[in-house]
Image (cartoon, rainbow, N blue to C red; front, side, top):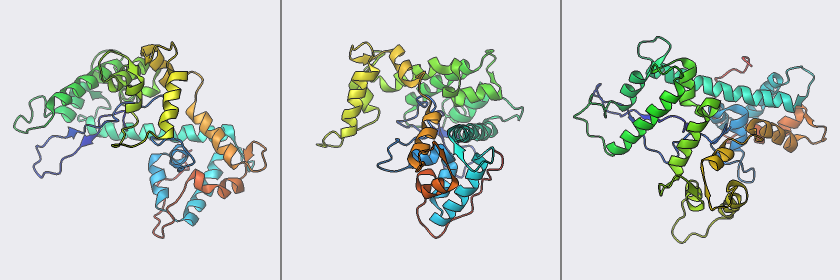
Length: 320
C-alpha cells in the first residue's frame, strides 16, 4: 500500500543485511478512502469492483478460480451480506459489507506491520523500533553496506518521522496500536488529514512552489510515450482540473484546494460503490438484489480467469 514505505528484503544470505525501503513513484497515501488502487472504469475491467467487494487479497484468490468456483463462493458471501435473511441484498447491507472488507484489510495490514516492527512484543511500536528496522542502513548499523540514493532515503526517513510524530498524540515517540494505525493509514483519521494534504503536495509539486499546476497534476498519473497522442481520459482529467479542482481559477491547486479534492465532504467511495453494484445488477429495478441477480452478474462482483486449477478460498467469511 502506498500508505507505508514498502520493505524490500534483500535476498542475501548474510543475517546482518538491513531491509531497504523501495523507492516508488506512487508511494504516498491514498486520496481519501479509496477501495482499490485500480481506476474505476468498467469499460476496461472490473478490478476496482472486485477489490472493493472482496478486498485486495481475496480478489487475487478469486482470480485463480474457475467461473464455477467463483460463483459458488460468491453465493456463500451473498448469504453473509443478507443480514436479515429476507433473500434480498439492499444498498445498506452491501455498504456494510464493503466497509467491513475495507476495515478488515486495514486491521490485517496493521497486524502484519506490528509483528514486523514491535521487537519487544509490548503491543506498541516506538520510533526507534521502526527506524532501526527500516533505515538501519542510514543510521550507522550497516555502515559498510553501500546503499545507492542515500539522500532520497534520508528524505523518506524524515518524512516518516514527521508522520510518526503527528500520529503519536502524546509525543512520547511510542505509538500505540491505534497511533500506529494512524501512521500506516493516515487517510483513515481526521487528525491526520493535514498530513495527507502536505504529503500529496510534496509528491506532486515538482517545481517546489508549494502548489500543483495542471502539468504536475497530469504527470502524477500519466507519463506519455514518445510521439504518443494524449489519451482521451487525460484530456478529461485536464478538464476536471480546470472545472472542478482549481476552485479559484488561478491555474494551480493550493493546500485548501488539494484538501477539498482528496477529502471531499460529499463523496463516500463505499456508498457510491454499493449503489453502483446494485444499479448494474438490479434487472427488475426494485433497488435491491436477489442472489440470482448477483450471480447472473458474478463477473462484476468477483471475476475469474477461467482456469482449471482453482485453489480453495483460504479466508472464511463467517466473521462478518
